[in-house]
Image (tube, rainbow, N blue to C red; front, side, top):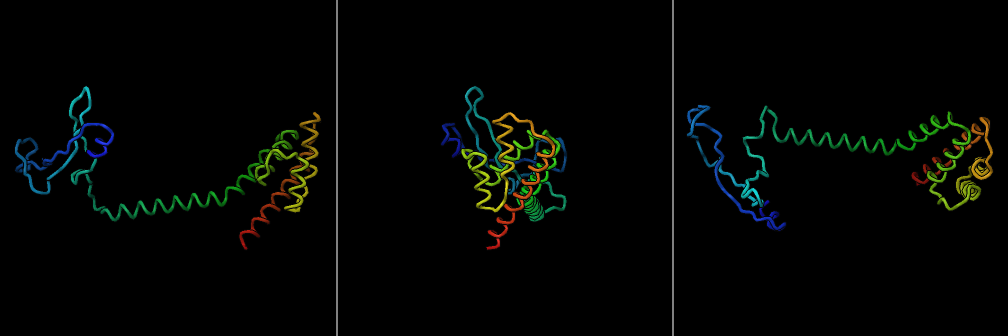
Length: 198
């Protein structure tokens, strides 16, 4: 800490002394303490303008470590298990996220207005298939058909009518769009699975 403080332009000095934590004769109020070599201690002091030299304690002394039958090895083992479980949870989330996101999307947009649902489906197609938004909906349908053998031409046509033609779509069209979306999603999942198996 002294070196880091000096490197940061803060005047600092290295101090040595003793921790006085064990009173002589175990009396709580006493000016005399038992001091051994184990009580040797070093600490930094930094000069803070307006306050003067202040002592800092960047390390934990042995007196501050609570020992209730728990060893450092136990603490490290516990920390390792927590890290491992956290990593497993993150991996499971990453692995399951596409499926969870897909189901939530279906649940959410199967109840929205047909126009909102079709627009959301088309936007999701761009995202999950990794297609640049500079492509039109028809071009996107063509790319998905050629690369994944999935037909979303009806979605593209409904999207164009709703967004550019001002058409009001009905529930039957929303269901058709949702069905095409599910089929396209399954085709995407199948192709990713084949790639992973190779």
